[in-house]
Amino acid sequence: MSRFPHLPTCAACTRLSLATLAVMALATIANAADKAVDTKAAEAAIRASGETFVKAFNKGDAKSLAELWTEEGTLADQRGVILKGRKAIQGEYAALFKQQPGAKIEVAIQSIDFPTPTMAVEDGIGTVITKQGAAPTASRYTAVHVKQDNTWLMASVRESSIDLPSNYQQLQSLEWLVGKWESKGGGASVHTTIQWFANKSFLKRDYTVKQDGVTVSSGMQIIGLDPQAGQVRSWSFDAAGGFGTGLWTATPQGWQIESAGVLADGTPTSSQELLIRVADENNVLGWRSINRKVGDVKLPDTREVVLDRVPEKR
Image 1 (cartoon, rainbow, N blue to C red):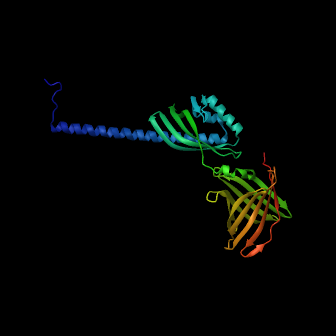
Image 2: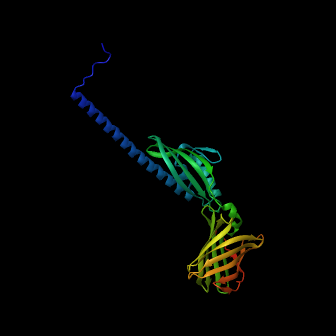
Image 3: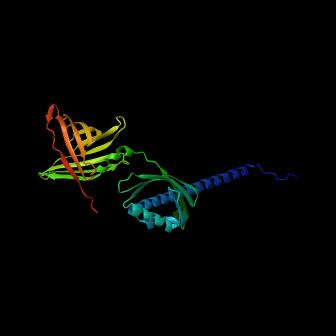
């Protein structure tokens, strides 16, 4: 006697089997669709939590940051120090904000995976920018989220430092220029602001020249490393529509800049700009333009303009 009973092969049974398989397939598809919907909602919730993290960090709110972890959550920073619990995590962020007031963070989420319906693994890169003008720092992170009482919280975060490409080292000798400068006298005034941007790979200078309170000239200059020339180069743009470029060479007195440009009407220009730095003095700078030409016409050299640093408001 057979161990298994004989299975009927009638047409009705075949139809029944096909119907059963169809129902099972539909159920599987429905379950997969429900899971996809649940995952989509969970991912949206985790991304919203990331936005909350950024807002709290940029406000310097250590308490709100710590509340995004579980009660016994952990944070392992770039130094390998492991902090456990909300109290320790809050203290770490509070110390950071005290040391670096005004620090800001940017977070780029690269992936979110769901090993289980109540656990998610997030990978991304965080970049911190300090108000003092130091080079940004970046870290690669992995955050494990768990769902507790219908809320996604971080149970574990691990960070590892990464290097951000920058030409900061090649431009570091110009860092003393960062800030606001002005010169006033004889009814004329010059105001200029210099600041880092693009991960300290470039300096940006905005300037305005006024005579008797009326703006007679204004524009913007970008200063960075020219990798082909192996020298510092500047690109200048004025409000009238002219533009130019300059190649910088360090001198014992500061910098000499070989400039060439074009006025808005197409007339070529050239000059040597002298950026003069007083030894051991970071709050005064001099500027002078010599060997000036507009088209074929030679222009007289300018007098040295002395600019004083504008103290920062506290």
